[in-house]
Amino acid sequence: MSLTPVPVALKALLDSVPGPTPAQTLALAHCAGRVLAEDVAALRTQPPFANSAMDGYAARATDLTLGKELKVVGESAAGRGFSGQVGPGETVRIFTGAPIPDGADAIVIQEHAEGVGGPVIRVVKPAGKGQFIRPAGLDFQTGEILLKAGRRLDSAALGLAAAAGHPTLSVRRKPLVAILATGDELVLPGEPVGPDQIVASNSFALAALIEEAGGTALDLGIARDNHPDLAAKIDAARAAGADVLITLGGASVGEHDLVQAALKAQGMALGFWKIAMRPGKPMMMGRLGPMVALGLPGNPVSSIVCGHLFAMPLVEALLGIADPERDRSEPATLAVDLPANDERQDYLRATTEIIEGERRVRPFAKQDSSMLANLSRAEALVIRPAFAEPAKAGDPCRIIRLR
Ligand SMILES: Nc1nc2c(c(=O)[nH]1)N[C@H]1C(S)=C(S)[C@@H](COP(=O)(O)OP(=O)(O)OC[C@H]3O[C@@H](n4cnc5c(N)ncnc54)[C@H](O)[C@@H]3O)O[C@H]1N2
Ligand code: MOO
Image (tube, rainbow, N blue to C red; front, side, top):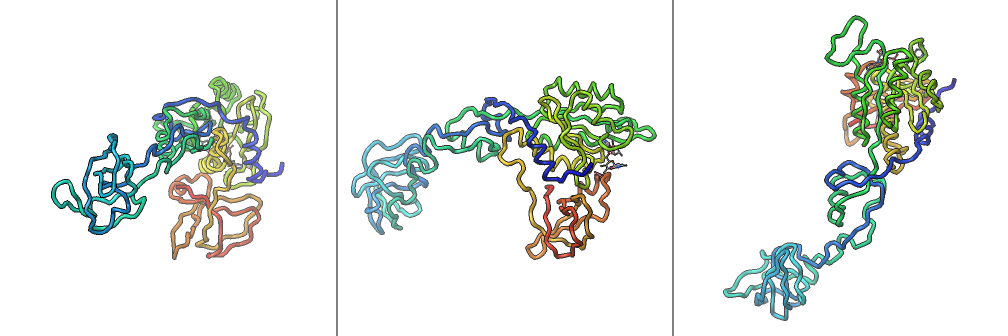
């Protein structure tokens, strides 16, 4: 079977998503990091009235000339405006956020006015028309679309939704991603490690990526390399209503690599198996009813790199985020020579440094897909396209930043 190129695999995976998860209404306080299911329109105009950007004096701009003396006829504070009219030769003491009184069309800040005894001030620096006045609707108008569906709710978006008068928002349900480790050799961290056993790490790494992308990770534990156990764990994922089942390991061609057969036995329609990528070659994708099945290789670095490249965009697609397929790579410059590449697109763990304004990347000499320590030290993955010619230090390249 030929190897599926990375972009073809990504497209097939995202196309397999039946649609975004259903919408749910949440109180604003619980919306951080969630993704909007609908556009958000302003329920009010902001600011609702012209107000002062500074503490000072509101007057007619024609009166705010050097040395002019003005009579203070009242005060406008935030929440308590001045109800009268500002006439020629008059001014109103005003504070930041307070409504601009009728008749006034400029603010002189208090540092540019001095008291001359009694309720009189003198202008020591002129102010032009409109100075320090925020007109009504400066920020937004009622009905204006402020945030589009698919927007992740960061602090700026949440502040804006609140200012626009929304106590709740319609957001996508977090995609539920069941994660199943497989292997007779695996024990959990902290458990006694017998001969020939390995500590399972992939579920923890993948759960973190899923949560970072905006999903909920459901750890199904470890299935042993036999059909009854695998079937029971796959059943558990379906019973939980998982949108996605990620399996870890058992993806390759050995006699104990049973995951694909176990999924097919339950009716999985295979999308693809084996991609032109290093690490990550034995990755598999299929559909089991409404659930997307993503089979990641067991090697820890392979599963995490596939998690970045495939599982995170999959969660984004389920959240209805626009263009989950977008190119996430950035330009950089190689710090070392690299040999020609074969048919698998490489993702090389690398450190990065800025030299003379240029991001230089230095892949580790050892790239074995079992080595997690250099993945945690890596700041980027250097992409080496399939069949790339030998490259020299100083050549341009593309990278995916890891942090
Ligand atoms: N004859 C061939 N052998 C292999 C091929 C191939 O094409 N022909 N492909 C290799 C590649 S590439 C990869 S990647 C691995 C992936 O194999 P599996 O997905 O079947 O992974 P396992 O055999 O189950 O495990 C590989 C390795 O990773 C450890 N592992 C597994 N699960 C976990 C976990 N949850 N946490 C930590 N470590 C885990 C496992 O103990 C093994 O050491 O196949 C190559 N072989
Ligand atoms: O593709 Mo495997 O992930 O090279 O080790």
